[in-house]
Length: 162
Image 1 (cartoon, helix red, strand yellow):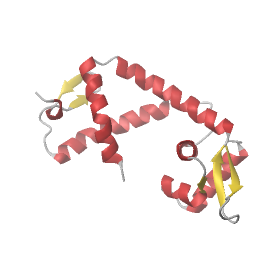
Image 2 (cartoon, helix red, strand yellow):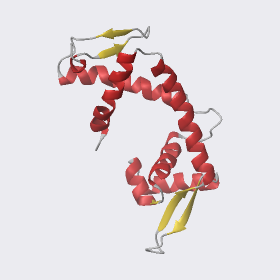
Image 3 (tube, helix red, strand yellow):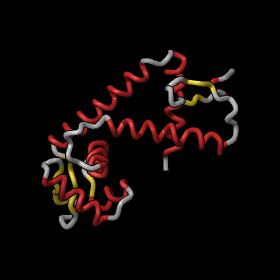
Image 4 (cartoon, rainbow, N blue to C red):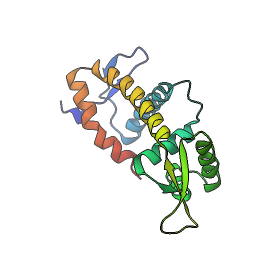
């Protein structure tokens, strides 16, 4: 059987069962959604409990880490929030020393938000902790299951692209 015809569902007892009866797009979506939500929840739980940051603040830092300096409006658009909300988020990140604002070289009236060295270190520590947890879980899978996950990555990226 081809891997594309075989979908896996993780049951509550964490046993992996082949679920070949899932055929329609709606059935795939219905089976995939809770699995993705559980994975996202578990990855959020792997964040350090000593971080006094909300999810929105961590996401904004992650965007700055990946993309570099951004205007507040563009950062707000990336994070799907209103600019005033992002301004408050950036104010909090600045107060914690995790981000800073500088005037744009192109337009001095426009400020750019940059991640600081402390912000970069925090993002890297957070990412490394969650990557280690996920790597441990993936290592426990069979080689065939790991290959299936590896091959699904670009497909999941395509599904989540805007």
